[in-house]
Structure formats: C-alpha cells, structure tokens
Length: 552
Image (cartoon, rainbow, N blue to C red):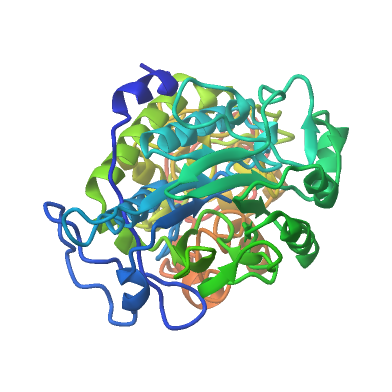
C-alpha cells in the first residue's frame, strides 16, 4: 500500500516514552539516561564530556510538555560529516524517555501527565510535490507517537497535506492565530487554538507568524487577512490556562510582542523556533508563572535539531505554578534509547520511501532544456583519461548513488540531487534539472555518483571533438579553486558538511583534484580512438590530444 494515512491506522500503537539532561552551560547537550529494561544497551558509554543534569532529570513533575517543530523539511539527519543532529527517530526516543520518567516512583504513586506538541514550521513550503508525501509522513508520526496537538507555521500553510483533516486522535493542525486562511485551504474553518488537559492543568497552544511573512502569503493567495499578534490576542477569552505560543522570530520584535500580549491573559510561554535569534533561553529553573507575570521565552531552535521539555510544578499552596525548561539536542546517541518508539518511526519512514517511489516524484521532477552540451557520464571520459577515471572510481564521490541505494533513498529527489550528475541548485530552496541530467536509477545509471561533469560541466560535445576546448560545458577542462569551491558548496553546505569551508583547501580539494595522477598520464588517447564524425583521428601511438588534421 502507498497511502500512508491508511497504513498508519495499522501501525499506530500506544508507545510509552521519557527525557534527558544537559551540560552545565546554557545549551542542553544530553547524555541519554540509562536504557529501559529490555531495550538494547548502548554499545559504549557516552563521552564523559556530556553531563547529565541529574537533579532536573530526577524530578517527577505533575506535568511535562514535549515540544518539537521547526524542521522545515529536515525530518531526518542528512549529511556527509558527523555528528548530524535531529531526526524524528531521535525525537521519538527522547519522548519515550520523558514518558518513562512520568511513571510513579513508588507503586500506587501519582503518574505525571506528558503531552507532546508539534509546534509547526515543519515543511519548507517551496512548492515541490514531494512535500505532500512528507506532510503525510510527519502527521503519521504524530499520530503513532500520541501527540496531543499540531500547529502550522507560515511554511506549512502552503502545503495542503499539512492542513487537511484526517480521522485521528491528533487534532487538525491549527492555523496561525493572526491570519485568516483563504477559502481553498483545507484548514480554513479550523479554530487556531488547540486546547487539552495535562493532569490538573489546562493548556492552550497556538502559533503566530511574522506579519511580513503573512502579508507575503496573502499576496500569494494562501491567506485572506493578516493582523498583528496583539490584535489577535486582544479578542481572545482569558481562561485559567497555560498559554503556549509558537513563533519563528528572526528578530526579537515578534517574540516580545507575543510576550507582552500574553501577560494579561495568564501563565504564558513563548517558544521560539528560529536559530537563536530572539532573546530566549535553552534552560530555566523553577520560574514562577501566572497572571500578571512576564511570560517566559524559550528556544527550541531551527531545522529540527533539538526538542524542548517543559516541567510544570505547583507551588506548595497549590495556587500557582513554577516552570523549568531544557532544550535537548538530538545527538546520535539517542538512537540507542526508546527502541520501540524509534522502530515505529522507522516503519513509517519505510512507508514514506515507498510512497516517494510509487508516486514517481523523481521522474516527474520539472526539467529544463540543456542550453548546450548534454551529460554523458564519467565512463565516457575513461577512454582518454583512464588514470583519472581510476582515481575517481576509488573516491567516495563515485559511490554517492550506492550510499542512497543501501538506504533505499535512491528514488528520492531530495536525496538524489547531491548524489548524481546534472542537478544544480537554482536558489536557496530550488533545484534546476536539465533533460539530459540523471533521471532515475534504472534509466540513467551511468549518471549515478558525483562524477567528472559535476565539476567540468556537460561533456556531450567534448567527447565528439576533444581538441575544441570551447565545447566544454560550464566548468571547462581546467577548473579554478574558486570555481571548484562554488561548485561544491550547494551540497557541502554548513548543515550537511560541517567544517567544509574551513578544511576545503587542506582536506577536501586534494581529495578531488587528481593530484596523485602524474601529468603525463592524465590524458592518454588510445591507439584505436576514433572521433565522432568530426576531426580526423590522431596518429597511431599518440599520447595526448593534438590538433586534428584536415577533415575527410
């Protein structure tokens, strides 16, 4: 079956969960807690540099809120360096541990309430069809892991699959509070708040998007009206509730505006999903909250690299609450914990990959026309550049497609683009593909891997007339270091290839510049070489390209 929404009903299980520690500084870098009984123990002890906040971890508050979001399409770690942070599987493991820590310390004791919330900004909103499948996948994970609510950010509003209702226990993703959606949006009639109980506490969660972004959505037809956060909250009732507002605040203005608007409404928390731009924090301890008090601002961060955990404890007289907060980075060690929860996500990820393949997103990706020479693959270069070709075959670049095949991601356009020949970044969130570039693993296997033409440009005309160097595509026969660097950066960016720019000249460039191949072996024309319809073949025994003789 390819419909993940239908399959999730079979896979949704009651998954039990629980949480983590941090370092002694501001950013919580977890050392995962001891694995639960029956789970797979870690291969080795976590590094000593990761300190478990034992005092915070040992608490058993009556209410814990698990917060995730801000993925912007990055639902699993991706990259060629380590450690890559993030991923739904690791988030599931943390949630599992958070839920386990809610169990009573003694038989018959009170069990803490744990509620999981998806805060939005989960999709990129860049218009690629594949986002529909990704939205189905994410919502299936929310359902299977027992989330209480999900919100929409401005990027999610542009993806119908994130907005549409579906029969499940997870409430319809709630639209931003400060916009009115366009009539065509599936969530147009949805209330922007998600309300639920958490033990003795009532919780109301909502999202607020930047008015400038919202105005852009209005111009593009996704929303009909935009208001400020202050205007939106001024018309809101004031229940005895904990208010949790999700924002992506690239400046302090939006977070501060929401904070100010929440103050007269009751206890409030503003959760910032940007990359640390606003003045929130990664860690708080026992901060009083309530009517008339300044709502707190906390940071989860961008690109799904971390989750947040809010502890809520009643003060002794029961008349108020204190809040503690930890931001927990999703480091690779988390994959050793919460086995059952992680396996649930893995099963849904398998379905997602099958959906991507069956919907043929790779074949349907919009293509342009080659402006000049087309792509022919690295094997077409081997005849005259055998030593260089052999050197390349030993490189990790030549195996780039195989690494995807091992994980069954070789039909996924998001992965393929950095592992094959001919896909190029056209903008921050868009790619350009020509009609001769890699198409699918079965139709164009010769363009698999990162090959000669990724750096030197399309070689279709060059193989016909190797003496006319003007026939190279962009890149040409002698690529300069700056040109190489600009060619590499679209895939070896800061998110997917840590330290690439710092180590480019000393580490990465020598790995691809054929420096181990002697100059006199870099180009050797075989004795039986024949040009394709153009120049006369070189003299027998030639050991390099020479100017052609007169045409026949």
